[in-house]
Length: 254
Ligand code: NDP
View 1 (cartoon, rainbow, N blue to C red):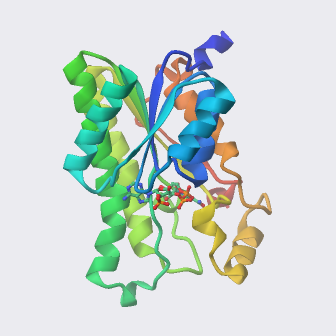
View 2: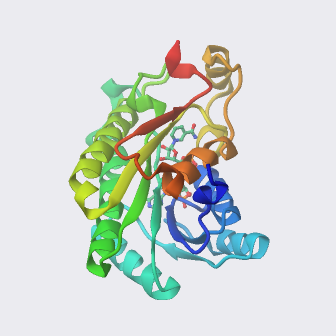
């Protein structure tokens, strides 16, 4: 196959949650493939954007945006398009996790997680797709789900997270079918346990237990997800939509 089909040169990719963790590392890799990058994050990610621009010779900007606020999301997409001239691709990745037994979860605990992880994914995908349709453009979305969409992790209680991620996986399929006639592909990745700020402060005995349970006997690194995101965002996957790619060191297979 022509390796240029994996190139993202000339594209502009929006990345949510790109200030740290998976979003930050994947943003660097997307830029390495030639894409300009727009980071949308709750906090100021302008330092990360400057680092990406300097290291990869692409354009990169950061806009502050809470993915749970549909009006703010629509404004951020509009601003991003105005600043960059156009938008082509979306890595819809921002998320949060709560480790708390279901019996102890308050209504706010539960709805906060679902609001960021599921509603936020929808609001950003919708605003991005509306932008594409208004411009008469086709485009391409990758959502970050999780292996927790498929299995129930232990020993931690994380019912809010698991159910929100199962929602992301089925939302992905629903949007893929609905937007196929518009030329908008929608896929998801489902990472296993990945070393990021999100997992870095989890109690040590749980991290050791997870590692023991993973057939690869180690947690993954964000860079090990980048190839899948590049593949799904690029012209290497033009016949792929509604798919979920589990990248987990074989965790859900056992
Ligand atoms: P991190 O906590 O390291 O990074 C998440 C990023 O999302 C942060 O920059 C955070 O911003 C941003 N964010 C959180 N809430 C919002 C919001 N409301 N609006 C905008 N941005 C927000 O997490 P990871 O990199 O580990 O996770 C990235 C994605 O991957 C998540 O969807 C997560 O569920 C998923 N995932 C992670 C796994 C792992 O093991 N790490 C495994 C499977 C899936 P700020 O810091 O400024 O608040």
